[in-house]
Structure formats: structure tokens, C-alpha cells
Length: 451
Image (cartoon, rainbow, N blue to C red; front, side):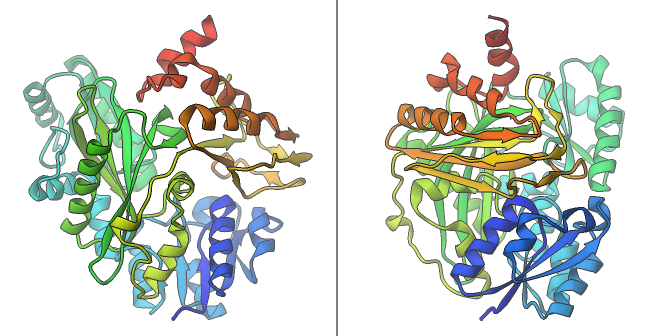
């Protein structure tokens, strides 16, 4: 049994986890940086501990301070949320060493799936379709050149420890190779402390489709369907929906089976997401597994009625999954817009500052996950996402209309947000027809803007 959970995160995901913990009658400890002393997640928690200065590396990424906060407050579990330390195997291992329950998969699973090149090998051996690419990390420029010549251009260079779109470069010819490798390696070292790279065949105009899974400690695994995540800016998702307009019931079944096979291959436990690329012929390829809760998990919760965060906590406490595969029903259509404190028409330039007014819409089929309120300060130290708007309706056309109404119902002053940009996406004719891929923003939105 768990009694007290420390949340090693901030913002909307911390608030979301606090809600789930309180529903389960668990005491919650928040951690915060000096810049977040007055943040919403701090006020919602039962206890709060400052873990360092404003910079992320000195606070929310400070393993020693966060573990100390858990020990001092008597927390018997830690939920890492997403980002920050959520996929850091050393953090999970530190929790295990201190007899603190880590609400996520075991550290060895995180390490295995965190190495993207190694994860590809595991999936290939398990019979899960994988994007053609290098079997191991590339050693040097001649090695990369030889692999690229064999695969054929265009190719993609990716960081082996990557995530969040960092350490990725697309190469269309051999002349671009050396510079791209240097740039990707530098970014990988800066973001992940590891410059290992690998190569993948670049699939033209793919969709990014991911499958949510839940696995308990008793051998039970279910999938909760797919999410369409193709609307991205520089590999960062802006809008997600479920079901995908491109996925039939038979394809959904095959995607789910592949995701479960991937989880079984690594003895997965807790919530996770298996990510695939879907080509124009509806062939799918494994690209990575995220060993944590996803930003876009509410889309699946709205569609299935399964509380994924609550399931995470229950699984960590040793309980069995609350549902079986045959009991999961995919009802209607759900859509999520990630609201950023940024200007979508100015290359998503961040817009830090104080929110002088924050008024949100209400209505049926509408959920807003947020970590801010009137008076909140948006710091330049952290990710600019301030809220997620999630809508549900029986049809895709219906949920698009509901989302448009919800976004128009916001009143935000003091900062710029991406709400106007999201409204443009929703009004785009290609999007409304479901004709989307990972290049949608640069190919469809730019032409729409010009027209």
C-alpha cells in the first residue's frame, strides 16, 4: 500500500497527478524551484519542498535534492510525470535503492528503451516492424556514409538517447552528411549527455501514430488504442487526436498487437507508449517506446474512460489492471490542443510574463488540464506549455467544432498564446479532411497563411 506520493515535476502534469492521488486518498508532496514558489501545483499539494534555484538542472533535474525531499517528508513513492527525470534510469534506480516506489517501469527497462538504437534491435528480434536503419550506433563519418549509401537517401540521423525532437537531422544527399552529424552529435551531447547517433531510412510524408499501453506486475497487458500525433512543429507535437483518421479497425487491432508484443519483449510494467510511423500504404514501423505518461494521455482517457494516471499509481502499488482488453471501448472522437505561451506566427517565440487574466470556457465534452491561473508567472526557464484543452464528441467533425468553440471561449491577457494558431489549424481544409502527416505545418499551414 502507498500512503504518500512525491511528485517530481511541475505545471499541469503535477496538478493532474495531485488530482489522481487525492482521489485515491493519498497524501501529496510537491517539489518546486525558487521560481515556482507561488505555482498552482504547490498550492494544491498537502506539503511542498523547495529543491533548488530556478534553472531546471538545479531543481527539477537535481536527483539528490528530490530524493532527499522524499526521505525528509516520508514519501513512500515518487511519480516523475513526463519530461525532466521521467525517463532517467539513474533516477529510477536511486528510488529503488532508497526503497521508494517509482511510479513507472523498472530502471532497467527505462535504460533499455532509452537507448533508441538498442530498442530497435530488441523490437526487430521480437518481430515488431522497424524502420530500416543501422543495427547499432554509427562509429564515424565513413561508417555513416556507408550505411546511408546502402539505405538510400533521404535518411535521418537520430540521437540514440533522444527524445523531444532533439538530436535529429534529415539528410538528402552525401554532401550534407558531415555537417548534419556534427550538429546532431552536439545537440545530443547538450540535451542528453550522450552523443551516440544512429541512422534510419527517412519515410516520406508519414503519419506519427502511437499506441497507449498499460501493464501490471501480474503479466496483464492491454492497449488503449492509437493517437494521431502528426501535427508537429520541429518534432514537437501541437495537437493530438484519437482515433486516427487513417486507422481502420483491423489496422488498430494489428497496431495494438504489435504494441503489446513490444511491451512483452522487455517485460514492461506501468503505463507506456509505443510509437510508430505509418506510411501512405498504411504500413507501420516502430520508432521508439516512451517509458512514461505522455502529455497527450487525456485524449485516450476521454475516448476510453480509463484513468491512466490512476492506473499508474495502482500498478505501482502492486494491484492488477482494473480492466481487460475486451472491456475497453473506443467511443466517439477526442482531440487535444497544447496551449503554449508562445507566438505561433513568429516561429513559436516564447512569451514569458505574468498572466493578468485567465478565464477558461466551460461546457459538455470539455476538459482543461492546466498549471496556471490569473497572476501566474510564466518563466523562461521552463517549457512554454501552460494548458491542454481536450474535447470529446461522437464524430470528428463534431469534436473539431467543439474545440473551436472552446478555444474561442478563452480570455488570456498578459502573454501571447498559440490559441490563434490552433484555430487556424482547426479551420484548415486539409486538416478537416484528415489529410495530415508530420510535414503538415510547413506544407499546409504555410500555404494556407499565404492564401
